[in-house]
Image (cartoon, rainbow, N blue to C red):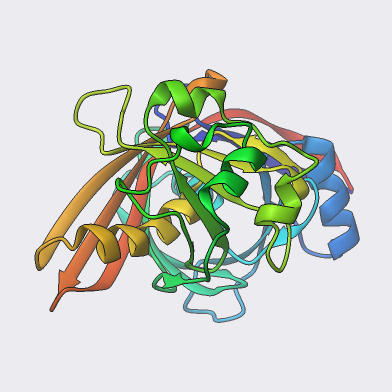
Length: 299
C-alpha cells in the first residue's frame, strides 16, 4: 500500500539545515515492527507516524521512532509535525490543537508561512524533574574523550534531568572543548547508560551567535543517533536544570539554544519559561520548520 510522506528540516527556516524529520501521513494499519523498519529505512534521527486521534477533540495521534527504538516524546518531531499539519491544511491562520503522544496530550500552536514552511510551539506535557546523579568529572570526561579540565561544573552542574526522556547534561568550558567531545564507545554506555541507552547533552555558554544563551551537542549512539542536530526533549529537560541552577526571577523568560553547528546543520530552539515563587510552572519550546521532500512509500 502506498503511504504519503513528507520530510522536513526542523528548528531552521532553510532547507538542508536543522534536524531532518520524516512524517508518514497515512499510518493506519501499520504495526510497531513495520514502523520501526520504515524509520530505519528513512535513517533520520526521528520518523513520526500520524494516526487518527483517540480523543475526537484532538488533532491527531502520533508515534515517534528513532532508527533503533520508539520514543514516548520528542521535541523536533512535535514541532515538525505541527508545522507539517499547518502547511497541509492550507489555512494560513495560526492554529491551536492537541497532538497525542505516548507521554500524553501535547498542546501545540502552529502557523504556516505558505505551502512549505512555518513555525510552531508546544507546551511541555510534563515539567522536568531531576533524574539522578552522574559520576565524577574524570569519569565523565574520559567517556567523552575530554580532559577533566574541560569540564566546567560552575556554569551548570553536571546532572540528569527528564521531561519525559532522561538526559545527562555535561557542561564544558568552551566551544573549542565542545568541538572535541565525542563518545568513547568503550566507556560511554557504562558511564551514562543509566536505565537505558545513554542520552548525553554536552553544553557550554560560549555561543556561536550573539544573543543566544546556550551551545549544545547531543550524543545517543545507543538509540541509533550518533549525534543529533537539534534535541527539543533535551531542551525540555534543560529547563529544569536552568531554573534550579540559575534561579531566574518570577515571570516570563526566553532562551535561545543553538545546536548542530559542528555537524553543519545549525539549529535554533526557543525555550520559554514561566517562573512563579521561584519554581518552574510552565515551559514551551518553539522553532521553525521547512518541508524538503514529499512522496509515497510502499508499506
